[in-house]
Each structure stands twice: as C-alpha cells, then as structure tokens.
Image (cartoon, rainbow, N blue to C red; front, side, top):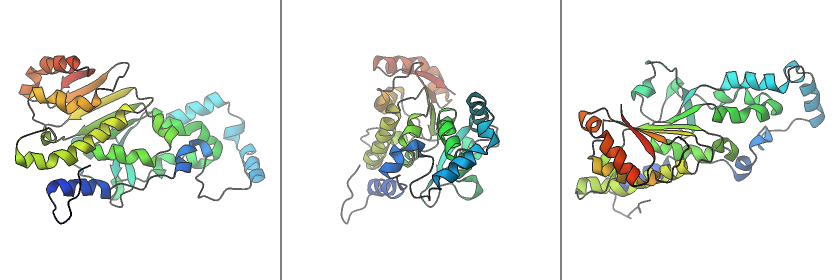
Length: 285
C-alpha cells in the first residue's frame, strides 16, 4: 500500500487511506476457526439438556431423513446471485439479485456503499441456518457453495474475506467480479495516471491474491466495463498478470467491453494471454 506522506496529500494518498478506513471489522480468530459452532461465542448458550429436548420435539429434524432435509436446505438457500455490498457503517451486506433487468446493481446504477432497503442484513440469508445448531451445521456451507457471489467493486472481495468464517469462505465455488476498472491502474508515463497507480494497483493485486487462494473455486468471471477500461490490447496481459496463478479445471472467463476494437482483437488478446500462461476464455460482450 502506498505510504501516506506527512503533510502532503495526493490523490494516491487519499485513495490508499480511504481503502484502509473503509475496512469492516474482522471476525475474531476463534469465530473464524469454529465455523460449525452453531452460535457465536458472544451469544448466551442454552442449557444443553433443554436444547436436546427441543431438538427431539422438532418434527422436521426427527421425522425427516437427512437426505430430505438437505434437499429442503438446498431449495431454500441455493440458486441465487448475491451482490456483495458495503453499507455506510462499513459493515458488509448483500442484495439478492432478482435475476431480471430490474436489478439496479447489474445495470451499474447503484453506487457503493448501498443505502436503504437495498442493503439487506446478512441475517436475511442466515435466517434458516441460525434456527438451531443442527440446522446450522447441516445448511451453512450450502449458502456459500450453491450461490454465485458477485462483486461490483474490487474492495468488496477483500473486505468480505475477514468477516466470513474460514470454512464458509473456502466453500465458495462461483465468483463474478464486474466493475469499471480504471485503465490508469496500468504503468504509465502520464503524471495524471501515475498518481493513481500505486494505490489502485495494490488493491487490485490484493483482490487477485484473494481469488487465487480460494480453495474450492470452480467458476470465475471477470467483466470489464467500457465506462473506463479502454486500454490497447498489448496492455491487457499486464493488467491480468496477477491472475496468472488462477488455474481452474475449466478455466475462467474474461468479458471485455463490447466495443468494435475489442471485438476485432479477441483472438489476439486470447493468444497473448495464453503465451503468458493466463488460462481464460476471452469474450467481448
């Protein structure tokens, strides 16, 4: 991260400081390490004997076989696209995508941090898992490995990581990163672009490192918006170099802005990336 100069504040300093100041509070080590504890350690634990009696009285848990219960949890929790956002209080939250053209975030109309009802508490998605300890243990990982997690800001991914228990984070299989990446994050002799390079580039590198270290990631899509990204094809491999170590079974997808320039150069970009050992499927869409 760029150093903050005492008494001198450039745009580079402002960006770096804002990135640090907006970070949410991370989970304690004990909470991150014990994903399947059922409840946080700060919550009051019920009497064990009373808890067992309540479990025995629950028809859902006693009369349905585990296979049927898992099918129910999957239907309730899975098959969603979850937009990860940050609220004004720096806490991470989400918006469940309606999967229609009415989604403001998919259209890029909603800036972050997201305010109001659109920013739903994470408890909304956890309402089923936190019903009781047994349901939590059976269903919590489904919430992470059966849904698509979409990030519209590179900060959001690195911000979310410390707030999620380790086993839940490792269960994530599908990630989409879509944002108007500034082309001036690339090295440049232009002094105006240079002041952004160090701070912005470092955040991008940290995001790529977080992605490449996801243990069970199966699908990754990087969508570059045409509002900012308009770099020549020879610079794109430089921009994607931090993702060289992302080796997925089916590769990952790069979606470039649907501009005539990129449409014509798709094959060239694809060839250059493969020469550098970056395994991705390039599309202009």
